[in-house]
Image (cartoon, rainbow, N blue to C red; front, top):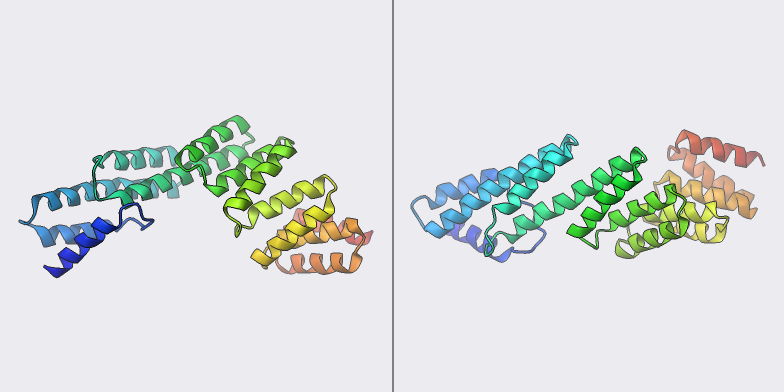
Length: 246
């Protein structure tokens, strides 16, 4: 019938796209439409059902920070696909989820100051996708925390190049330059950050911090006032208040 034919057409034309995995309920509906029909199509739907279930299990595991289990589920989903298949877009979704999980595992290791373990997981994310910008941001954080500032700068610059609308590497790179006393470079980055996200208090704090050391008190007060209104975190607020007294 027409709904079945249209759905099959979509399956056949979506290979390699970034379409989100179609819910399992839709596979069941398709199954009911093709009962007693084309055997190869039924086999494809069975593969999709199995892969979708494991992908969904991986998603649920990741929600509860059970990343090792999530990885096992996604790897199982990938193994369900034959070499020549019409489900490349679902395979893409599973691969995409794996790199995000590795990124999150790297984040967790960074919060524990376990730099060697963080590097392992971040490298694994890059093996899945070498152009995954958030990994370079996190490598920048890793290097910055270890005071390897030249490496941090290169990582943040790579992240900005790959994903210029992500505010985080601008703010982090600005903090590296301000820490080195290169306030003009830092200020340029913080300004760009406020354009990308005008509601980011850390970006305005960075602006105010640079203006304070550049001797521009009016702009310093203005930037800090904006940061305060946006809910600047307490430790940064204390630094800002001390600078405003100078």
